[in-house]
Image 1: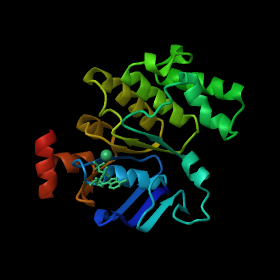
Image 2: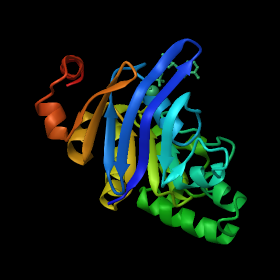
Image 3: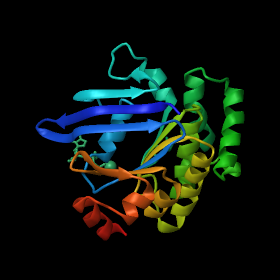
Image 4: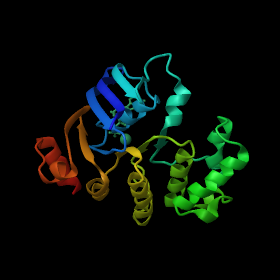
Length: 243
Ligand code: ADP
Ligand code: MG
């Protein structure tokens, strides 16, 4: 095993608002880490710092051995290696499903158009949307759009996937299909960091659960430790509300 992501004493402030107050987190290759915690605790900020959508105020963020705060770090390379899936899909609504998926690989010259469409077709099959390559984004349900967003992220062949509440904007009946795709991905050995309120998914799929509150990791452990034997009072209170 080797560390894919290493975060050391990460601090992030917005003005006078200290949002991350010293986060230490190591994620090993093939590991699935689920981050839970109340709204506003800094979960999204933490994820966004990992692929340089946010700059750390201080501390160290290392991805695949590269310190991403280093101005010499190749930002494109960092982003190519980390796929991210957001709560609100962030697809291009004026493009077809296929066009969304091939856009980055073709633009960054990772593949010819033909290769990229071939791969898009394969990826759509793995997310259960084989027949949707020519469909408009707007004709899809939210759950289908989120599966396209996952396929789009995978088209760059990332070795780490970040998910920021991927099912929070979905109607309940769509949640299962998206979680099933994520579970498949975990089974295939993808290194994943997932922010979610789906505690069933966390129990079943996570190797480790991390509880963030007030900009700090308050507790972490196996799903069993965190859900069945929580130590921290805030975690106990949080679990009482969500379980
Ligand atoms: P979570 O994802 O756990 O709900 P966030 O990381 O989104 O929490 O936000 C943590 C805190 O940081 C909140 O108080 C939020 O208002 C603040 N925050 C997040 N992004 C920004 C930003 N770009 N500018 C200013 N404040 C922000
Ligand atoms: Mg968030």
